[in-house]
Image (tube, rainbow, N blue to C red):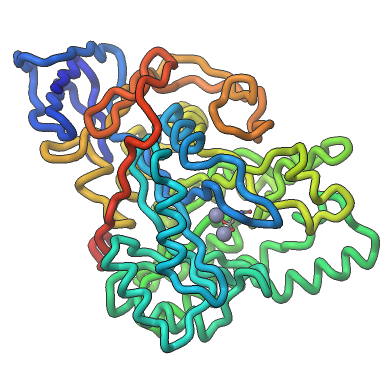
Amino acid sequence: MSTLIKNGRIITAEQDYRADIYIEKDLITTIGSNLNMHADSVIDAKGKYVIPGGIDVHTHLDMPFGGTTSCDDFETGTRAAAFGGTTCIVDFATQSKGSRMRNALDIWWKKAEGKATIDYGLHMIVTDLPEAHLEDMSDMVREGVTSFKLFMAYPNVLMADDATIFRAMRHTAKTGALVCMHAENGSVIDLIVQQALAEGKTAPIFHALTRPTTAEAEAVNRSIALAEMAGAPVYIVHLSCNDALEKVAEARDKGLPVYAETCPQYLFLSLDDMNKPGFEDAKVVFTPPLREKWNHEKLWSGLKKNTLQVVSTDHCPFCFKEQKELGKNNFTKIPNGGPGIEHRLQLMFDGGVRQGRISLNRWVELTSTTPAKMFGLYPRKGTIAVGSDADIVIWDPEKDYTISVKTHHMAVDYSMFEGRKVKGNIDTVFSRGEKIIQNDRFLSKAGRGNFVKRDTYAGAWK
Ligand code: URP
Ligand code: ZN
Ligand code: ZN
C-alpha cells in the first residue's frame, strides 16, 4: 500500500515548508517537491498543514482508581485520541502493592490487546520497590518500559516515601530510564483534608481548596533535590501552577536535567470554573486541582521559554453518573481525573497558535516531537522524515469545531470543555501509513495498534 500526500505545508518542530510525502507501507520513504510517483492513493493537502501525529505521554485507560475504573478502555480511548490527531500514547500500567511490575505489564498488555487503534507505549507506576526487587526496573527497561511514575501524593494508596523515590532514581541514573513524578505533598494534604471534613466541608470545591499550590511546589522542589542527589533526571507530570513552575525554572537555571509537562486543563480552566450548582464541579476534580486563573499566563510563558517542554492530557475519565457521583456526600470519594485525550491538539492550536502565544513549530514540538524525544520514541515517531513511521495528521487550520459531549468519541458522559468553540481540526489521520480517519469517519479497526518498545531517555535530549 502506498500513499502520496501532495501540496501540503509540512510543519515539524524545526521546519515549515511545502513538499509532497510518499508513504510505503508503514513508513515515510520520500519527501520532495512535485513528486511524480505512482501511489495506490493520492491525497491533495492544499491549504492544510501536514504534521507528525500527536503523542500523548500521559493517559490512564481502563485504570482502576478511586474505587472504580476509568471509563475509556484502549479501544474507545485510542480511537478518541486519533479523532483528535494523536497517533501514539504512553499509558500507565500500575504495579499493585505486594505484586511485581511484570504482573502489571502483563495485565496492561492484555487490556490493550485487540483494542488499541493507534500505537501505544507504557510507563510503570511503582508502588512497591524493596531493594530485593530493584532489578524489576531493569527488566522493564529491557521490555521497552523506560519510564517509571512515582507518587508523592495519595498516602496509603500510591504514595512512595522519599527513600523509595531515591532508590528508584539511583536505579534510573544507571539504566538511563526516567522517573516521572506526581509532585504533591500527600501527607500534609491529608491533614488539611481531614480538617476540612471535620468542619463539614464536603463539596467538590474543597478538593481544590485543600491542595494548596505550596504543597505542589514543595514536592517539586523535594523531587528535584532527590534527583540531584541520585544523579538522575526527573520529569514532573501535570504541573499546574506558578509556584511549582518557579522550582523547575530554578533547577533548570542551575543546569539540572529537570523537565516538566502541563496539561490543557491547567491552561484553559481555573477555580472560576468550579462554581456550578449542585455536584457539577465534580467534573473537574483531578489532582493537582484547578488553580487561580492568573497562573495560566505563567504556564504559557513557561511553555514559551521551555521551562515546560511537553503538553500531555492526563486523560483519566470517569462518568459523572455513578462514577463521579461516588463522592456526592464527600469530595474525597470523587474519583480523581478528567477526560481530555481528544482535544489536546485543537486546544493548543486554537488557544496557543491562533492566540499568538506559541508558534506553529512550538505547537508540534510540545505535542509530538519533545514527548517522542523524552520518552524514547524519536525519530521513529514525533517528526516527518524519511524513515519515520508514517504517523501523519493533515490539519485544517480553518475548520471550526465545537467541543461537546454530543460529538466527542470518548466514552465519558460529559466534556470538561463543553461548548468551547475552536478553529483548527483534523482533516485526515494516518497511523503507520494506514488512513484511519477521514471525513470525520473512523476507517480502521480495533487491535491494529502496536505496543512500542521505547528506548531510554539516556540524556539523549537536553
Ligand atoms: O487526578 C488525576 N490526575 N488522576 C489521574 C492519576 C494521576 O495522578 O495522574
Ligand atoms: Zn499524577
Ligand atoms: Zn495521571
